Structures are given as structure tokens and as C-alpha cells.
Length: 556
Image (cartoon, rainbow, N blue to C red):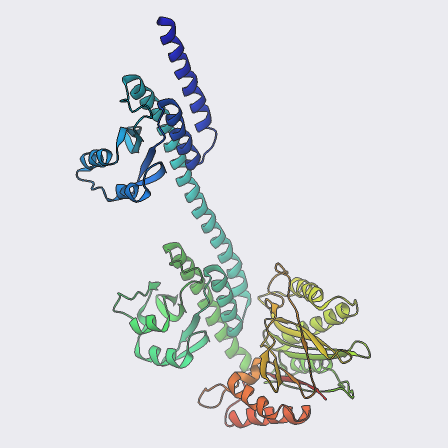
């Protein structure tokens, strides 16, 4: 008899040693709980069990084997005031054979509940002693894993903070080197939209008696009306707008979820309005702190940009402007190719002496013609030099006979390595094959050109990210479309669609599309003249604010 008891004790000790070794071999809570429950099943001869742990004072089932899931979920409904009594009632109702507390360092972590034994006998003292021992071993592991997970979460938060600080450091350098408000606002939007994953946003700058909307993906007219009726200048810290809040409810209905003030010396100089995140996740306190820091960096740069602009406007740097104008003029093709199968007309009209728009037409072979259009960020000498680099890159790449998609990847990498201070380019290029009558293209964030024919309008959107923002991560995609007689492809920059009249109304994509639909069968030169005449008519009485570039490819 003594030998038998010794054998039982030896087996129990061996089981406990094996269990301790297994459960501590992996810092995974599911692994530990499964190990604990299955060890109980094997030793105590039962096939039903529940492990429930506390989460913010709420008991949550973490592992369930053999019990009805609906009943098990009712553990979360147990009241804190009469907890153990209600747990006993739950055990009786669900035929729980034995319950053991999971305790570590006098802290109640949860419970393990086992069903009846397969033999239908009661759990004896030896069973209870084994369960108590194994739970004590497991509770230490569970607590260690919980502490590890908390530490891991803290480390993730810390990593996020470090990434945000690094981002702020880089943005601070970028903002400090930019002296153009448009570029500041675009860099601000790109940094926020990438970090926060938002698709709707607006940047508003407050002046003495009015405000300017620098960027907006909200309905501009509605936003203007709402801003006239609410005083965002009184907000000094980031504010989350909810359906339940009484303040700024009209902005909430427009889609605004967060208002981030841009503050200098305790005075709000502007606001960033953000819509919901693409992931539908809420804005955390850490997000708001990051947004506030970025906003304050940006408004300093915007104020510096204003001062710089005022200083530059008082000086006429004729020599530099003449150099830039000469560079830009030489970048544009002097003569456009002609063919019996197609015709091309193009125009570039700068807002000032020099501009940031660019187009090119290159006869690659007897049957293949490359056309391209670009809108370089910024103006003046820097934009002209960047355009010169772009043209040089184009010539070096298309002579290599790469496929258009592969060439796009190389082009983006080259431009990314040679642009600084937040410079970027929206770019579109394509190759027309007059023999197969096919047009292959790649769009790099440019206004989608319009393919117009008797079927209506098709927008050529296939491509990828804006040229020069960063090296290629996701390869560019291309598309080939079949063309027929009288088909028209219209390439243009946003200087046309965003051209404003004296009432600040944009010319709009809709007006351009209507015009070319009605005239697409005309000659390319006539179509181009009609567009320019219509834009000029729309903007009568106002100053041209942006460069206008347009290219028409017409199939005969």
C-alpha cells in the first residue's frame, strides 16, 4: 500500500514538473491556459472546463471546452457585489464539479471551473490537492504573461511615441526649410493623412477679418458657410467632435471629427479639420498630441512663409526670373510630331514668368510616340531646375526600351533621390502606337486625362503614388486602351479645372468634361482653343493663379 502511495506521489510530482516546464516555455496566454486546462483533463479525468480571468474587474471567459458558449458568456454578467455566490449558482446550473481560484501574490486573477468526472464520482481530496497545486504553478505563469503583455503594450506605445518624435523632428526640418505656404500645406496634409490615415481634411488660416482655406476635401462652399457661423479661433487645444456634443455640431454633420488648432503665442492662427479615419478607429490622446505638435510646427512655417512672401514681393529679381524662364522654355518641345493617323496640339501658359507645369512629346519610333505631362510643386527657379532634371531622367529612361510600368518605377526612384524640401511631381505619361492603335499609360498622381469618344468619357487613372515623394515600394501599374477614329485623349493640369473667377468659383472638372464631350470630333487645335477660350471667359476679371498646361491627342 505504501509503495502504491509512493508511486502515485511520484507520478503526481512528475506531472507537475512536466507541467511547470511546459507552461513556462512560451509567453503566450492561450498556450498557457490550454496547457493548464488539458493537464487538468488528463489527470482529473474530465472533458469539460472553463478558465475565466478578470479584465478591469469584469470576469471574462478566456478558454472554454465542452460547455455551451452562450451560457459561459454569462460569466461576464456576474455582479461584483455578490460575486462568489453568483459563481456558485452558475456552477450548480452548469454542473461544475469543482472550482478553484487563480491567485498570484494575493491577487485574484480569475477561476478555473471543471465539469463532472467521466466516472461520475466526486472529486476527492487528492484531486483537489493536485488541482490546487497545478493552479498555483499556473497562476504565477499567467501573471507573468499578463505583465509581459502589459509591458509589450507599453513598449509599442513607446515605439509609437518614438516614431512620432522622429517624424516631428524630420517635419520640423522640412517645415523650417519651406518658404511657400502651398508647399507647407501640402506637406502638412501628406504627413497627417499618412500618419492618421484620413481621406477628408481641411486647412484653414485665420487672418484679421477673414479666413483662407488652403486645402479641403470637404465641400468647400458648405465648409465656408459653416466657418462663417462658428468661431474656431477660440479653440486652443485639439477637440474631438461627437454627435452628443453641442458645440460645432454642424461641422460634425459635414464629416469633421477633430479640430486641431494651429497656435502661436497663445493665439489660434489656423485650424486643421480632420474627418474619420479610414480604419474607423478613434483618435487617441497620443494622436491628438502628435497632431497638435505638427500643427504648431506648420503654422510657424506658414507665418514665416507669409513674411518671406512679403519681402520677396518688394523685390524684382529680374535676372533670376529670366534664367528660370529660359530654362523652362527650352524644356518644352519646339516642334510637335505630325502623322496621317493622329495629330497633337499643346499649350503651356504660366501664371508668372516661370511656372511649375511641364509637357513633352517624343517620337520613339516610326509608329510609337511618347507623350507626358507634369505639375511640379513650387514655382520659379527651383521648379524649373526640377523640371530640367525630370526631362533628363525621361530621356535617359525611355532610350532604354523598358516597359512603361518598369520605367515608371525607375523614374520615381531617380526623382526621389534628387528632390528635397518636400518637392514632388504629379506626372502622367503614355505611349501611342499608331500601328496597333493602342495607348499604354501610367498615372503618377496626376489629374486623370480624359479619353473621349462616342461612348462618353473614360478617366485614365491607373498608376500609383505621386512622383518623387518616396522610393518605389508598391510598383506602378499600367493600362492599355484601344483607340478608334475620332477618339480624343486630353491631358491637363489643375490650373485649368481649378482656375477661379472673381467670385472664387472654380472652372471645375464637370465644365471641362462637358466642353470636350461636345467638341471631341473637331481638330485638336480647335479643341485646345475652345478650352483656353472657355477658361479665359470664366476667369475674366481675375488674375491667373496657377499655370495652365494642356495637350490634345486626336486620332484621325
